[in-house]
Length: 126
Image (tube, rainbow, N blue to C red; front, top):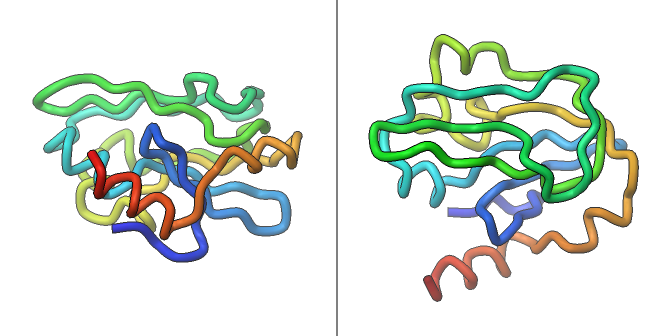
């Protein structure tokens, strides 16, 4: 399930953009495929990423998976709750389970993202 108003990558990350700030996480499809999450390695505050750079790591009982930055930007906040409660991503990946917030440094980086309808069509074809 995709959320209208969010943007997506084909690697199953989402970004909700407001006033140049992107809130980022993994999609419902991704968390379902991974299964029960047991660990999240968050990015460092202040670190800069280009679009599609490795941003974080999520680890489940099945596998570890890289999370890629959907935009170019600088990390300004991380969801510290995930350090002790990684299952928040399984329970509510689009709200309580967000991974980080980034100040977008290159607005052109959002041009490669797809909207919720395009993402659902993409996932439907997998």
